[in-house]
Length: 187
Image (cartoon, rainbow, N blue to C red):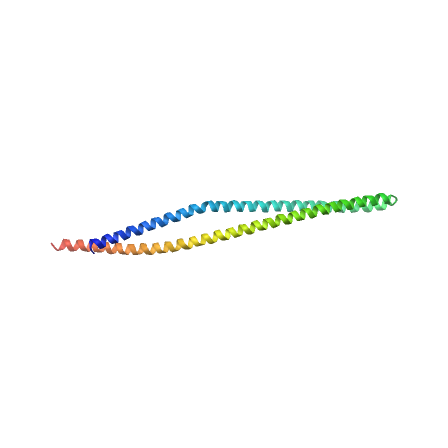
């Protein structure tokens, strides 16, 4: 092997090492760029968890109110029966109480309808936010997967290049040794 060939081989090895270092630096920069996005994703997930907890607390409150209302309604019916049995003489007063009760029931129904509408609106908004979150997650996952495929391809190419470089380096060392051995034996 001539000095020119040896110089070209060494230049090739140096160039391969420089490309490898540049690829590694690029991968590190991509990892650093992805770190804020992962933090933002984590924050979004925390917000979704908080929204779910708030909704759960609201449902618990609604269940508690419904149980209380049901208990109150049972007690009211018992009192109403006793009242009718003892106070048939006060029928006019009873009818006025019944009208008032119906108005309260109507007002309660109106409040429950308003609450139901608000609840459905909140659930719809939460579903939309969840769909947006899932779409963003899918995009980020696809980007991550594409980056990983590119990284795997680069690593495979680098390994092949490194193997070729190692083989050529061994050949160069063998040639240099052979040249040295040949020069020292033939004066």
